[in-house]
Image (cartoon, rainbow, N blue to C red; front, side, top):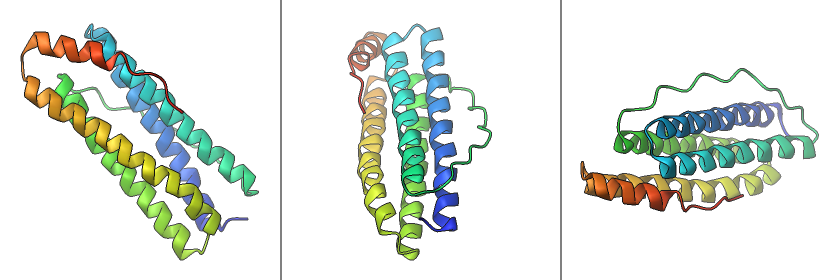
Length: 165
């Protein structure tokens, strides 16, 4: 059984992961409305991935004999106007999530919760990938600038992403 502190923090992380999913779903809707289906698909896959992350915490809590407590999920903010601004927000969001995962890991260490430390290692590695994907998109969109043909090419490329997890 995990400590009450770790249990509370993991329940909060479920909420954070579901919020992340909701943010990505909103961004997907934004890109659909902007007629950028490749970006929309990429964000929708992020939505599914974040939902899967929430379920990993959900299952881990139950495997350890804990109780999951779900709380209300905040509404996502409105999407920024440009693809670059959307991906800059995405990158900042992923950095925030990374910090949350690191804080959870520090708590697991402080509480001598070795199973949680092993479990959280997957998320630490995952956040390296999440940040890289977002920062790569930001860098490419900065190179593209306002050049519409390149933006459409990148949109098409982003739509080729396959599902993960």
